[in-house]
Length: 127
Image (cartoon, rainbow, N blue to C red; front, top):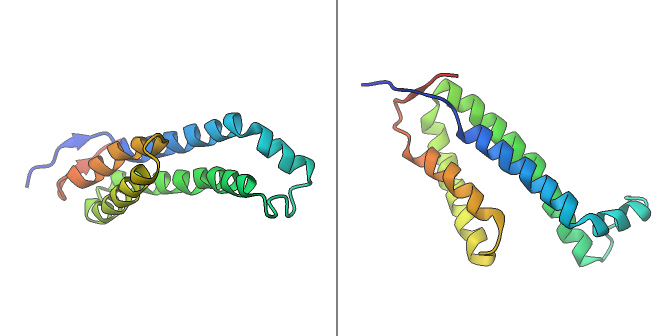
């Protein structure tokens, strides 16, 4: 079995996408977020569908960053068997997201899914 040295990039990529996602949400949805702050946050979504959508949008960045951190850790350990399963999951969610919203940031998940699926199981990573 041949081992090649590669720097981990998939986890950092996912963390970068999480930061971009969150900053984008703060900028684009500033009026909605301001209204929620003015209402005092507690139960500020209520029956407001837009506030609900913005809340879910903003809350997605945190879990994505955490997944990116775990992927980065697994990349450094060369745990490609486990990461391959995650790659299929990310690919499936990305395809669904792109079908529902082609004009979205879901395209940014494709490099991560591709990277997780293409790595040979014996590849070691340094970094």
